[in-house]
Length: 447
Image (cartoon, rainbow, N blue to C red):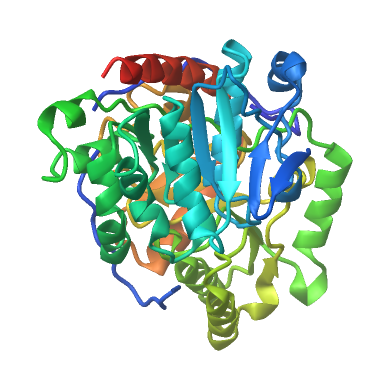
């Protein structure tokens, strides 16, 4: 838990689930939002100094910018290779992959390597996967690989590589399933068929996956739920920086805000960026001057989405009350900025869940939260740290189809309970995730 102002913290342990839900739709007006390394061409093999692995994981909790990733060596000891993209994108999946590699390598040094190959070299991508499989390694995909944008190659690369060799094992962590759009789902079918073992980061996603006819019952039942840890884990927040941000965000005179609504994360359809703007408008109609703070950006392969967002802000008349910061790579700066918000608003279309890294990040701050109801009543049953945040009086969950007016009411109600807000300590989640992955990898080798 990060405490920038003497607020209370709750510390407890999370769990590992072996059990998700159907997706519910949402109404209301919306718009379509559509370190060091060794480089060989467009491929990057991440290589951390093994002798420092334990120190890095325990003491250096900062998230490196995309162009300075922590490195993970491809050595004879490496039994697992995570493939992805090093493209500087806003999605947190690769941030997660690096955190996971750090945590696993801290327990079993050198076990996990990361290889990144970019969309311009699809043949090399498939060849590299086949190469690692031929070495009898586990090839682990974190899907979706956002760095490849709308390319269909990642969805079929594993099957193509499997046709080249029968050696090795294939693992896929499905960060999304229930909320996948149909085209993305169809593009992933070949890899799903080629996979030897699956991991889910939320009970919600696993439950939805159990209904798929693409995978046999035994393989589906064997798939564990291993919750993600937070990608954002700063060791300290500068209180002077927070105070300065609060003054800046609050404004003066006619532009002084009554409430600052914070948002953190990637902006795309299931995060409903339009609802953020509409909620701000609903508050202004009530006579409450709301400023919207956005710390995050749109996906790199959807260049028109930000333009559409800004256009909508002007159409709704709230552009002057929008503070769009984009992605902030420095964790200290990011959390200091977020700490200046009065309330967080995360209007997920599929409900709040353990898979949402943006929720985990802001849950470490003692600031009220408004989000949408979890699809499963037991979504946080085995995650007491996150459940404590959910159950706090300053956290208000709305139906996924709530109107902007309903979200506006929730923002005001949450702000009124600000003195009761808590932040939670999530430091232990990565160690637990690492242990669960080691068990998963060991079992997969015996398949």
